[in-house]
Image 1: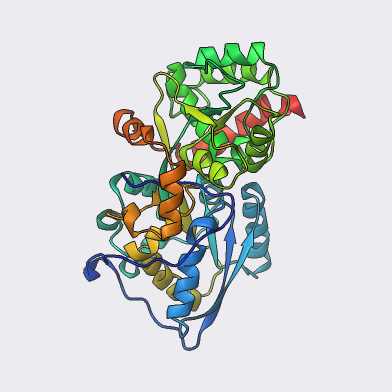
Image 2: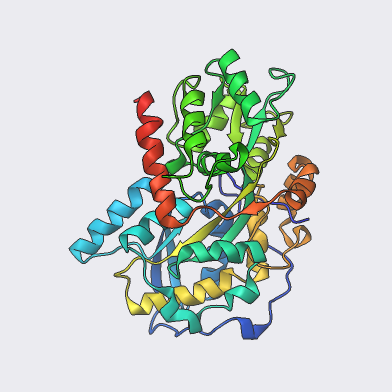
Length: 391
């Protein structure tokens, strides 16, 4: 079982091995007249998984790319920034690495180029991607490409010395929070993978009428989150704070995912002895990171970016995505095994991975996240009904 997930800090390293996918699956893009500089904005923590891939490309294809410039920003801020650049006719971000949050916002606002028009320049994604990653590809509406993937959650993580009997159902979790005020935490869903995974996973856990319709089908979910919120001190604006507080002992249970479980323990932010629990009847809500190109990027750079995407979707590069477990497992393409990953990644997964994950992934349903418009709507409702109550 491949094992990888989300990471706090970039630890990408060179990779030694790797089988190549058949060459017919990959297309050939047009080489630029001279090397270009590509500016990449990361709003998903994705560079922890992929920076090594981009750096390998720059080293190997210096006649295509002179350098990559990396920037990071909170996901909710980026769509407005790009929209302003587009309105001014001066887009200085060439590629965005995003989760479903900014992907969805950008699809909703028409910010990204249509990659369907560049289909011949991209790999055959159905043949290249893992089946569940290819399902995630559908959410991009031809405006992005899946570059990393993991089953995600929602799971809960707890300190066994503080929580002797962890909750096993959603109701037990709510009851526990009533008895242990301010000891449970999750971050604002629009800014947090574990936060939005919990948000999208609750309709399945609670048996809501339509898990795909947050406006009309989540009556139980919104009631539950409101009740849960009465026992939550505040909602952090990012996931890292949640795990810092778990590690410091301020919180005893937090919402988590496979990668946010493995990586903070590997980095020493959360004690190694922390445990995870799945709630009865849960469905995995899968997650992915996407590469999207803002409208306004030059045709010359788009051609280079097509070549870059072909490159990072090859197994040799995808093996870097195992990283330190941040996006467990991580690789989006088929047949990328842990033994292909850098030795450092193999060592981390061996020490901090959990044997039960293989069985949990195999024996529980896997659901794709909400469609972009529904996800944007879910974030809006959460902000108004739940988040606003904490200011």
